[in-house]
Image (cartoon, rainbow, N blue to C red):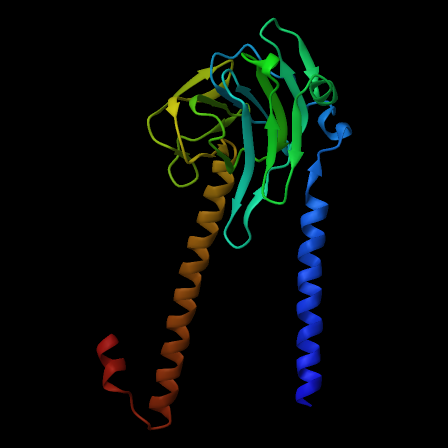
Length: 257
């Protein structure tokens, strides 16, 4: 019996190790050109004066433009509580040269740039002839709870979708501190003059959502009142039954009255 148990443990261990090796192999290597050359969900704003400009949408994807002047490489990754660092996945890669020329991912590679993925990160490396440009990507993200690591140090701007806000506490939150909010063309823009480490977090809400939150709170309050009244009625009925049966009432019950 012990031999069978030991054999079973050995088989399980072998499967775990094999799965880990396969994961390492499958997660490594270059990102497909088809992924990098995909069309972005909206046009990239290369004209931004911020080092990182993030444009959120009401859909499931956002766009980000990075000033990579003086940067040799960028490590894109996401942090997870149990499995450690994981590669950050993106698509619709574009690189803009200082003269304004924009190339897609496959052309970026053809000119000496590199985009590789390992089990822990996605690397973007720039050729020596690519100094002074900007790069742009599209990735998955929701305006209701958006988080990004500080891949590039410097000034940041996050533009919310039309009708979204962060003004209301609890449902709205912005981090780090030291930001300013300005409304331009009906959209709130959150800006930081300098972000050097950590992450940028924006939790926003659609202004019409406040009505839904209010209705939910009212229903919850009504349910709490009804529940309390029902409980007290049941308690009174129980006391009355005890009196009728001649069992009396506990002192604690009398004190509650």
